[in-house]
Image (cartoon, rainbow, N blue to C red; front, side):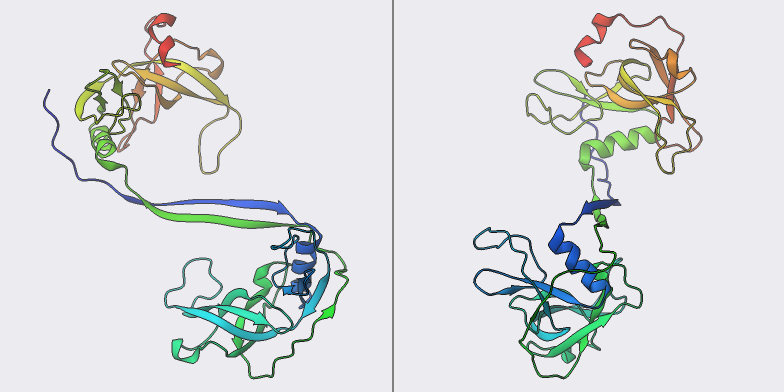
Length: 319
């Protein structure tokens, strides 16, 4: 069989997003609670330096540090970079500067947004102050941004016991990664074939195994694969699980079965949902076939074919 012509390599924007929940130790708890109360706290190290934001362990000696210090809400820009096109979730929606600001009484700089009319209005050494958010909850976003402010530096820092009413004990931080994904030539061919309701794998020229979905190279031999092989449409359930927790935006009656399915002619099982049969009747060896929906780009689910179950020896190497 001759290699298929190279298809257009696909790409699509994707986002991975989830809430990250973490508890706070005594130092971070005091720092974030202080922001809620319009107070900025740092921590003093054994050699007398004041670190803002505070950390729980000395970055030089690794010793635990708890000596909190209240620093000023005004400071000096130590360095900066202009952001002409703010992205989703950033502190300001209009162009701004990312700036490292050394607050009065601190020896290190805090990274935050600086609201300025343009890059010509920002310079290293300029004086700025905190602009507090209207509603504060005990998060770094309680500092809405910094803004230009003419004042004389005040290097003094006052000790602070870190005690506040109703301290913040934990935070939920949204994590998000936006990127453009390209599946490569092998999976682009696979996706293009699915549009025609065909499932295509690739055969390794060395071990002769057929991989579905194809990866462009044999994971065992490490050699490139480009010989196209149509597999299925029928297959065998090798292993499965019963899903009892509903996923967001998934309109499927609970519980349902998700399975590894070895398509006929393939040497690697793929994932698929099993339908058309009660969940408690799904079993290893069950023979299934794909069910397509109108306009669907891939099988919606797999259903029993009515054939006798496959013998265990025919799929045991694909578990």
